[in-house]
Amino acid sequence: MIRCEKNKGGRKSKYETHVEIRLFEIECWARDGLIDEQIANNLGVAYSTFREYVKEYSALSTALKRGKEIIDYEVENALLKRALGYEYREKKYAQVEMSEQEHYALIQVAVIKFKLDNPEATLEEIHLVELQVSKYKSMLVEEKTKEVSPDTTAQIFWLKNRRPDKWRDKQDIQHSGSMEINNPLKGLSTEDLKKLIDK
Image 1 (cartoon, rainbow, N blue to C red):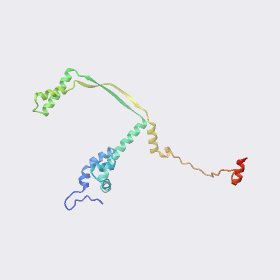
Image 2: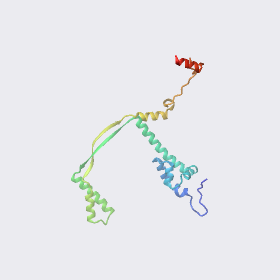
Image 3: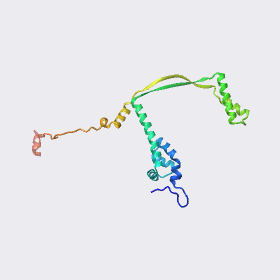
Image 4: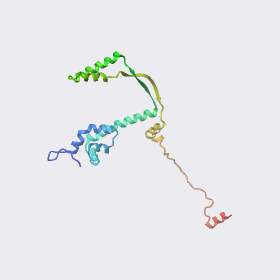
């Protein structure tokens, strides 16, 4: 069993130095879809040791569970959305040239900010900042609603997993009675069968 106690020399355990201080990162990695083995590798801990830590330390198992639950919910929501279909707004932008007044105002803002961050700035540096301010801006030129049709594959997957009683592939068929087939050649010897063939 792994212990989190400090040894006699005052040295911290690997759980304290490699895992406990990174619980938030562990939760994020789990949310991003990393499996436990990848998380152990990121922490510099053997996978077998990591599994023991998960069993022993509730803070670690809770961080993993929270991260995995979040991504599971997001995937469930995305699958449901895909199964039902949805609408979204598509926006198209174009680069258009600004008016001289608008461009000048942006240059002034950039210069003031640069001077505040760099009080010792030279005129040459300030001029470079002025040159870096683009004369163009993005402008919305078109916006329309688009529709994504429901996806039958997502629907089937959802129903097979949520309603297996109605939607599973394997069906149980109940049969009562015998499966005996009446064989007219039953009981004939090999010689009798050869005679029938030769006729």
